[in-house]
Image (cartoon, rainbow, N blue to C red; front, side, top):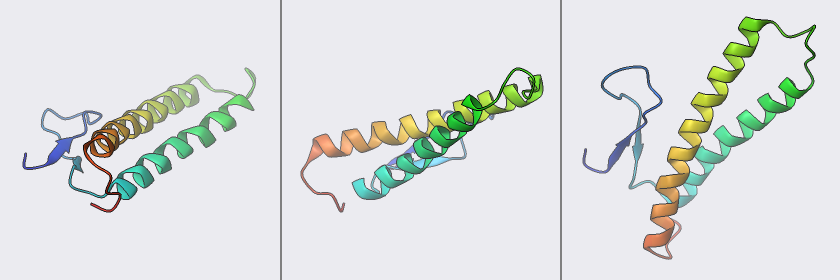
Amino acid sequence: MNGYIPLHSTATEHPVLLIDSSASLVDLLACADRRVRAIHKLMNSLSCMTARTADESDLFQIADIASLLLSDGVALLDVAQGKALQGPSLSA
């Protein structure tokens, strides 16, 4: 796909969300960081819930969101790691 890597976290047969493998390492890491930090905050909120305050559907939604964010974050980190191993440039 000419340097674009599909995210496999989509629910469609044909991926529509793509990672630009030519993006700078800094941009790839920033995007991954945002997703990982978001899931960290979500998990912190979840840790404050009790069995009485948690609804079954809420827990399902949280697990689904966590899975999506982590999947995207890991894919971004994989591309960033490949880019970091290719050379010393952080900007391209």
